[in-house]
Amino acid sequence: MKRRMEINGLLVEAEYSDKTVETIFLPLLSGLCRMQRELGRRLIVFLAAPPATGKSTLVKFLAGLSRERPELIPVTAAGMDGFHHYQEYLLSHTVFRDGEEIPMTLVKGAPVSFDLEAFRKRLFRIRTEKVCPWPEYNRKIHDPVDNAVWMEGDLVIIEGNYLLLDEEGWRDLKHDADYTIRILAKEEDVRERLVWRRAGNGVPLEEARYMVESNDLPNVRLCMERSVEGDITLRLEEDGNYTYVSGRWP
Image 1 (cartoon, rainbow, N blue to C red):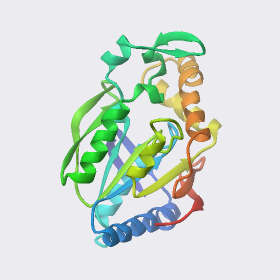
Image 2 (image 1 turned 120 degrees about the vertical axis):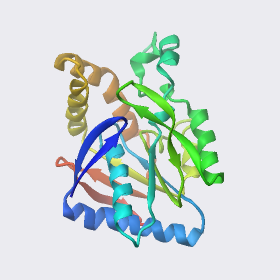
Image 3 (image 1 turned 45 degrees about the vertical axis):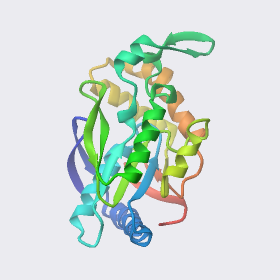
Image 4 (image 1 turned 60 degrees about the vertical axis):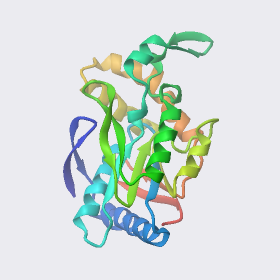
């Protein structure tokens, strides 16, 4: 099944097998709809995954799929990347890595480059407000755009790298979700995806590989090694589809 979607300001073509749609996506959406109806209020779902595992594409695809099936509740999809600190902030702040003080721009994408407090406050608003604005990260300008998405409806899925991170300040986020999804992937598969993502943005191939090794892969390993289990765990396969690993269906 193919879909052409705009994600973070870029046009993306997503394609998943019929098997993935029938055995993973539809059962997941059906279960989430049952949960929402039982709770009788907005259901908040976290989808946590390392960089380059297709999480932004996946939640947008699920949102589109939910609107094609009258038995399903329409999904509102959003990401936590809109809570990156603005580039101006990253340029004017530093962070210590391996005993060296470096510009925060060099670790963009790491937990420290996010405005966690702003994210927590907005989570409270979507729990309590019927309609709530939400920022979105735009890859054309490499900065967040505030109020780019409106969170509304009874079923909200939020994706992000660190939503299940087991570190101070982050580990409590799980309590803000009614259901959590974790995605695993092989590091070598993610590495190549990251290289071609950076190269696709005009970065020379060798420079792209250096940036991935020095900045992106440490974030991947952090997500893989320091995240708690989700209610359900899926795996990204080499062909871009997902398979069930463990956990309970909603």
